[in-house]
Image 1: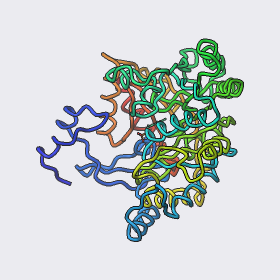
Image 2: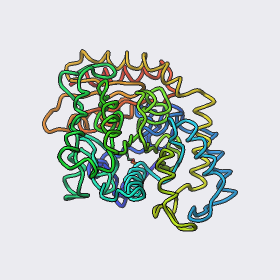
Image 3: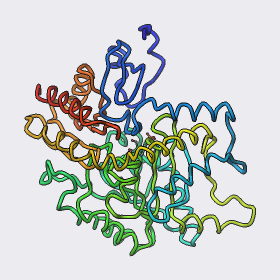
Image 4: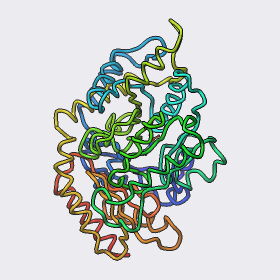
Amino acid sequence: MQYAANTLENHWMPFTSNRDFKSEPRLMVKAKGMHYWNHKGDKLIDASSGLFCCAAGHGRPEITEAVHASMQEIDYTPHFQVGHPSSFELARKVAKITPADLDYVFFCNSGSEAVETAIKMALAYHVAKGEAQRTRFVSRERAYHGVNIGGVSLSGMVRNRETFGAVMPGVAHLRHTWSPDARFTRGQPENGADLADDLQRFVDLYGSKSIAACFVEPIAGSTGVLIPPKGYLERLREICDRHGILLVFDEVICGFGRTGKAFAAQSFGVTPDIITMAKALTNGALPMGAVAVNEKIYHTVTSSALDGAVEFFHGYTYSAHPAACAAGIATLDIYEKEGLFERAAEMSPHFLDRMYDLQGIKAVTDIRGYGMLCGIDLATAGRPGLRGFDATKKLFARGLHIKFTGDAGICAPALVATKADIDEIWRIFKEVFSEY
Ligand SMILES: Cc1ncc(COP(=O)(O)O)c(C=O)c1O
């Protein structure tokens, strides 16, 4: 596909070095299965499922056809006081795979909106049960919870915060769980459960009845894949239970099979009160996010309002858009029919074998993997992030797409990846990383 050099200027691209990109564009023009094609006609293997979205592989006709049929039937309906059958069907399907009684599903349009929604749900829940003073939140250093002001406040990645001032007040951050002692650990590190005791320290500092919720990604994804130490999530759950704090798992990356089960909550055997999700909910085909909450939260909030009154003053024009619901239903059908969560669990050992084989390369300073998700740190060269950016471009030139955050590559192939696909990813990594 051709483009005129002067047609790139007007799009201010997100999380992009715009000046660099526009001088050397990397345009994707086609996607199928495990691959993208760029505007020069080169084929690239996709090592990050787009942006951790396309778990069933790109270009699934089942999804395209479901969306097409839905759009022909109905273009749009609001979901304020009216509805469309598809959202109820999708909510039922999501509830079928969420852990325990997290059976009540609120739809939005992105992971960032899911996080904002969860923040407001936590506040609304405590107000409904007469604890309106619970307005503080706890999250973690190196967390990523999207880009809206609430999510940025919870986030713990400095570059995402520093430009935007003091953001939302009342957020305390647990220490992150990365430790140099655990370098190259495969799966959960043995040590570090005690880092969860930071939550108890915040309770001791701020008062047990002031904290509304504790947000964590079960595996911190965007920061470069930090796997929770053994016992860490369990300990967070215990402390939350002891003090009436809601536990929120942000599973925007971990959800839908990435860890070998539907949700990381199930892989790690810890049940939160709220799960945020997005990305692979529609296989990335259309924007959609969702928040699943347990029965206690749903019933407390919905029974607190007067008869006929709105119970939760929150929602989006495009909440549960029928086309996105159609994409979500088709996607979950694919996951189920093809057993993709189980396939991820089966493929994980081969995937991790290949990723950990990179350990001997001089520039590779740490590898952290679980399920079908792996972070690979490259030694910083110059200022942080430069080498990661250089590697992104070099890998692209050799036919591989991956998301780097700073100097950490985040490898998350689609759950349909074959051993040959994984070997191809490994081969290109090895070639490029060995040049540093
Ligand atoms: C854990 C987590 N939460 C929230 C988000 C934000 O999602 P979105 O980019 O769809 O707004 C992301 C995105 O990567 C994420 O990884």
